[in-house]
Amino acid sequence: MRFDSIIIGGGVAGLSCAIRCAEAGLKTAVIAAGQSALHFSSGSIDVLSQLPDGTRVSHPFTAFDALYQQNPNHPYSLLGKDTVCEAVQWYQAMMATCGVQLQAQPDQANHLRLTPMGTFRSTWLSQQTVHPFPLTEPAWGLSRIALVTLEGFRDFQPQLATDNLRRLSAFDAVDIHTTAITLPGFDTMLRNPCEFRSIEISRVLRDTAKLHEFAKALIQQVGQADLVVLPAIFGNGDGAATIKLLEGLTGYRICELPTMPPSLLGIRLEEAMKLHFQALGGLLLRGDEVTGGTFENGRLQRIYTKHHQDMPLVAQQFLIASGSFFSRGLHAERNQIKEPVFGLDTANIPDRSHWYQGEFFAASSHPYLNMGVQCNRQLQPTLNNHTIDNLYCAGALLAHYDPVKEGCGSGVAISTGYFAAEQMIAAIRADQDTTTEPNEQSKRVYL
Ligand SMILES: Cc1cc2nc3c(=O)[nH]c(=O)nc-3n(C[C@H](O)[C@H](O)[C@H](O)COP(=O)(O)OP(=O)(O)OC[C@H]3O[C@@H](n4cnc5c(N)ncnc54)[C@H](O)[C@@H]3O)c2cc1C
Image (cartoon, rainbow, N blue to C red; front, side, top):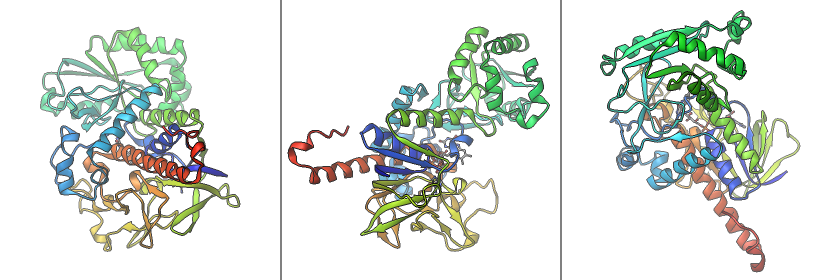
């Protein structure tokens, strides 16, 4: 099978690159072995919340110079502020065409999103159903909020969240109420708590009669509230529309919280991107895994997958966005880390005792989080110190940044995926220009 571009990995980095390639008219395939980190994420897009030296960032795009000073190898430092900004704006607009509205703050500042633990995390874009708490005054405009769950649901404990919220002085004057709704439709599911998860609940609440019952119970148990906080239990595709309906039925302002995995807010992003990619004509090979490839003259010629061991997949340009240790894009051995598909060169810390901090919740970053595949400014990796011309890397696979401490995971994934796509499109266009007759060139249009 021949393609213009092949993307290894179906997370936010791989899909951003794939969609951009497909938008530009490239014949593109994505191979996605399993679930991406989005199934575990809040579904909010972090761009930059903290610098490596620990300085908090309120306005991400004003902090890029300082980031460059502190870490010139950071993926953002390789790309530059303008490219990152362009990529995030493209992503926001592209997701809007898929029906997922991601909102930034008008003053270009980060905002806070509430976690299921009742703590706050700073982020850049949140879905329209997530309440953006202001960075400086998180309780602004709130005098009574209600944290609501379903009786028997284990993945969100409102009392725990409330206890943590009450510790914050900003919430001293806010009345925080918790309640658990009981619905008859959940009786059978409750018999086996392992099946009482957000995805199963969302299927029940898709039934209009059940949603009306839920709305009635909500009004009875919550009473008056400026904001009703619910766990994300409203569908991976149509969740936002269901919440709008519920707001209409109850008169409440409702906001969703990501739950313990599976996180519907993250899955919503992944499903929307996959559908959009396929609608653009892309081929998605779900559940297949790239096992290796062959290289000739400094170029990746073909790749092999578990399901296509005797039928190589050929392309002019490739991207690998197979994630970090979490998604098995990186593999740790006793004293080194490896990229398991091609054996690309990695940024290693030789002594394992220097990979981590003594304390799990240490103030400074765990060094292993900065380990990953080493790339040049074009995001091309090396294999045994030789650059691979037609292979690019994106996302959590990359070295030299810490998505957790710096709060930049999805921002790096989107911007490196987008930037790699632009390189791939340009390279294919250049190839076309040299191999096509001049009067034929005008027939191929790349956006
Ligand atoms: C638990 C958790 C929560 C997070 N929460 C947030 C958040 O709230 N906001 C935020 O901005 N960032 C968050 N992040 C960080 C951010 O989600 C990640 O940095 C980002 O999603 C990484 O995307 P990726 O596409 O590079 O990798 P991944 O999402 O890990 O995707 C990699 C994909 O490649 C596939 N793959 C691996 N090997 C192969 C192979 N050989 N062949 C084919 N496919 C393969 C995997 O199955 C997977 O589908 C979180 C990360 C984690 C781990």
